[in-house]
Image 1 (cartoon, helix red, strand yellow):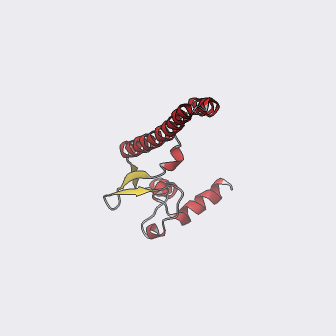
Image 2 (image 1 turned 90 degrees about the horizontal axis):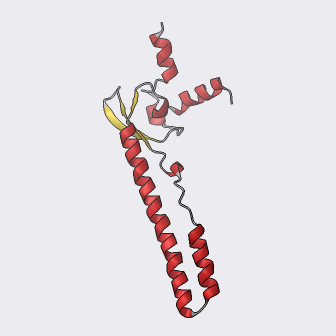
Image 3 (image 1 turned 135 degrees about the vertical axis):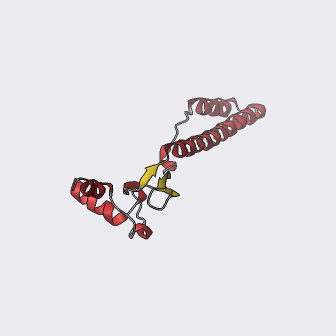
Length: 127
């Protein structure tokens, strides 16, 4: 897709992400990102903890091969934060003076009457 096609599609989608009235709230977005990071890290630690517990159980049962295998697997686990799970963005609509949350590049048809693309605002300002 070329730039003009993307622009036309964004005008149809009417997402707050591309609206000229959107004032981003980066602090709230960072707070959300940190919360998702914590949730993922907690989940990772639970999974790793279960592997280590299972390894201990196999050691008690005398199966050192399974014990060593699970210990090795747990030792090779590395936490990687998946930022794609925290796609919600935050901001303030300056047109209606209200807080909003939205997912970029998702169609929001209820914005059709109030949406003005950022690029269109620039054209109006330059007249």
